[in-house]
Image (cartoon, rainbow, N blue to C red; front, side):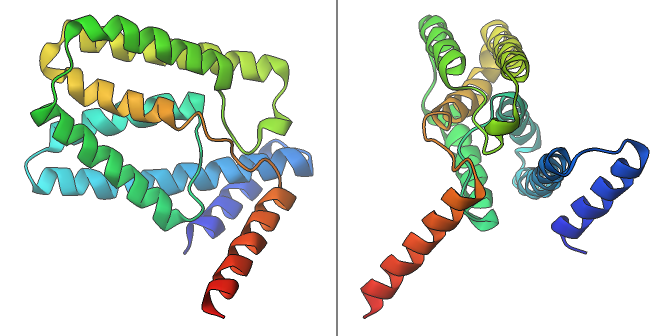
Length: 203
């Protein structure tokens, strides 16, 4: 059974318990699909981490990245494969940084302030932003700041964990800059444009 079918079944079950409008139902189903998809990717990368003896480090990296992303959002890859490769890259960069590129204590306040400013201006970054009320957006910003502050505090108090927490946070913050396609027409137009460029390159 595919993730989309599982999401549809869960959404239908939830609708029976608490009926929603079609628009609300579509947003909820999309959220469920993202959650299930990310759980699969999380477990896959975590398994690789355990196999190479980096289980705890992998757990910290993924928890920091996914914890902040859950609230702040970020640009989405065009395909599930692209998303999986992006998460894998974030994991590799964070592990490499932990080993070879230490982050000085003096840099933490700057990283925190810059991240805070980016969150205030750009979070939440999601393709469903049109369905968010001003109150929803404010809540997401506040939750994002709370998660960021918690991660930065742990990184400050635990030097041995610093890079494992800071690198994924910085990479997540960077994903807030690009703008997501916010509706179906934009996504379809983008896909048509990509297909046209491919056809032109072949001919």
